[in-house]
Image 1 (tube, rainbow, N blue to C red):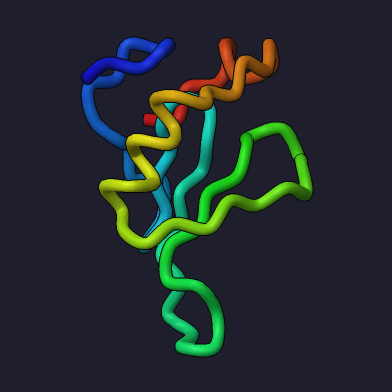
Image 2: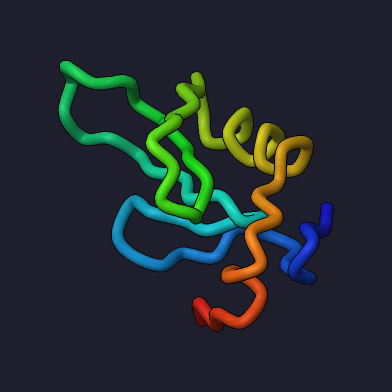
Length: 76
């Protein structure tokens, strides 16, 4: 498993927040909201809902965000 940016696993950028293949994956702590969501790292308002972190990572692999602004950002 390798994304477009050479990462072999999601990179944790904050508590309960990971970056993978140009998408941000978030674990929600509020029980009123979906547990796992992801969205493109380009200020898009479109949010994808997932049943698990594994599902979110798989979705990110198949639906990368190819925003040119992502290429110059070092998230580590």
